Image 1 (cartoon, helix red, strand yellow):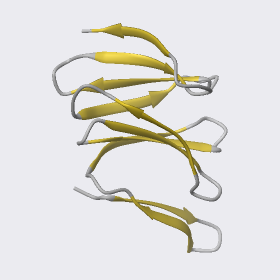
Image 2 (tube, rainbow, N blue to C red):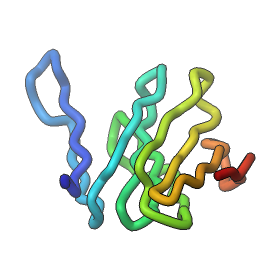
Image 3 (cartoon, rainbow, N blue to C red):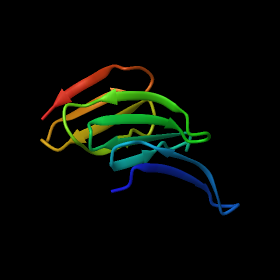
Image 4 (cartoon, rainbow, N blue to C red):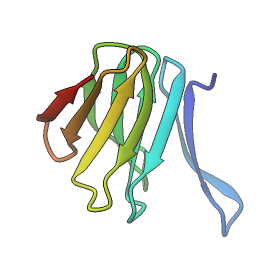
Length: 102
C-alpha cells in the first residue's frame, strides 16, 4: 500500500505536491470543489489536506484501521468507516464527531 499523497496538474503533466504520510493509505476522497482531500490510513488516522498546496488542515484519530472516507456534497462533513464496521460522521470544519455507529 502507498504511504504518499501526490497531487498532479493534469494540464501541465507535472506533480503539484507530494506528502509522505507514514502509514499506508486505505482510501481518499476529494471534495466536490477540489479544494480538500481526506485520507484514511491503516493506523486509524484521518487527515484533511489542502489540495492546492498539500498543507495539513486537520487530523483526526479513529478507533481502528480506517477503510473508507467520503466527503458530503456540501463539503462540511465527511464519513469514515473502519475495519471493525464502526463509522463516524465528522465535521470537516472542526474536531467534532457528529455521530458514531456500528
